[in-house]
Length: 110
Length: 246
Image (cartoon, rainbow over all chains, first blue to last red; front, side, top):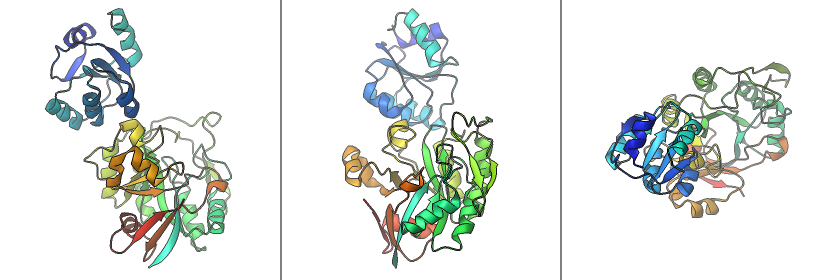
């Protein structure tokens, strides 16, 4: 499944978009960026409450398909600018990481 | 120029995680016994025991640097230091406005006790201190710098509540030049683990929650006890220097 299908089905807000046609390989949930760097896998959707600009660097490093900032958390302007510059997809939802995870599993992303 | 022994990260009984006998008087007595010249009492998101400590220290060979350990919205602990108590009080007002409107559950988190210069109980801090304020790191650094203070990210080697754990690395644009490492790691070990650390100057502190943990952690070679002098010593400028005691 591609990022844009997930955006449509979950009604996600697109904060920064590069390539929404990218294929999604699974998901990772985490807010400690040091741990996310070690554990998130290429092509994952990364669900986090963090809206700090370091999120963009970690997303690039782990090569995730998109970041979903959950619970409607604020994404810093510096993060948005960097995401647009570096080509990182940042999406946002009012739902919690768990609620999103349940929906993602039902859509076949496991 | 002389050598001052310092420990810049000590929690008083105002921090819910600290021992209830960590009153300002007891901390200062222990610090003097340990041969310390400079300490800072750095409670979580509050400075309500610092004034008593400054007053008690006025009659001792010890200097107390006004300080606090604030928790940013990202969950990162940051030490903040000021030259004057008034600056710290101004900062505390800002922090209190930014704390979530929640009460402390002392059964769960612990007691938050305010004491006076005689170590007598004054009050309990009712607000929950063991949490994050709404301000983000960048805002905290800007505001403290603007007030004339100094920010040093706490225990960067710790796997939680630290800049490196929570944010993965030090945000490059941030006006931070000094980092604190915990007593559990040496300067050499941390530089091996994170090579970019060599760009920063380091301090180490006891992060004492019990009297027994208080001890000299730093040596500062400088002219006098003041925040600008400490900063020069840590950065190794103008003939000042510092050393982590291990």
